[in-house]
Image (tube, rainbow, N blue to C red; front, top):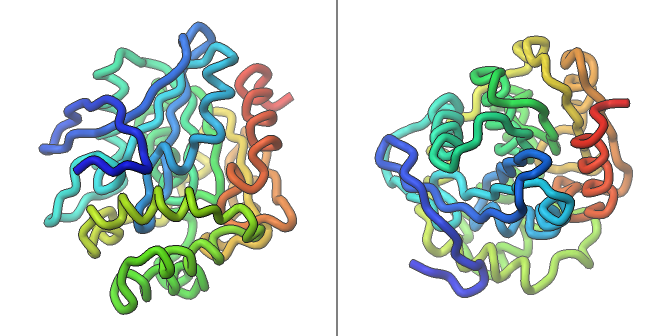
Length: 278
């Protein structure tokens, strides 16, 4: 089903019966950047990163912006459970399909957890990580106590999907409510109507905090101090346990750093791609 608010791109078969949808832009003369979005009703790569990947493409990078299984235009299995290893393998298969053997992975929320798994499982593939409030750093019980997660669960299983309930969740996702535009709500709502309500539980996000010291590639991490989905205490875990990392905790910012502080995120990410952590 094609939704009007989100443009359609390309597709690749990535195994396990999954067909992954993705957008791409840029020449790739300076390398490739893979963008991995978060979860939640109506999520898609384009909706998460449309304000970020074009700048990198303009500077000579090949930007690949997929929809994770269950989201956007990608396959949406209604049965079965998938681990982070399974989903990381799907992303690896996508990169193989488009001819990429070295990549910087940008991931937010669940996408950050997937990015971490990719760095752990495929160290020769992942050159650098850019993380924004990555998941998979706490127990499930800790996440279920977060105000934003509780609101999202209520919408999925009690209140139902509507433009107004989507707006309720986004009021917790962003610190600056002026950035909750009708365009953003429509993008998410139209995709959400194509998803099964159990979609969010289809991917099991394991707690990977004890494995952070195994990540040897350079890591740049952003975290909003007012995040109501992933505890900001995770920022110190990245900073203290990833041996080659820099972490920025941003005041007056919620769960979507790349939207609320797009200029800052874009500039620092570009600098990181060009100059590592100097």
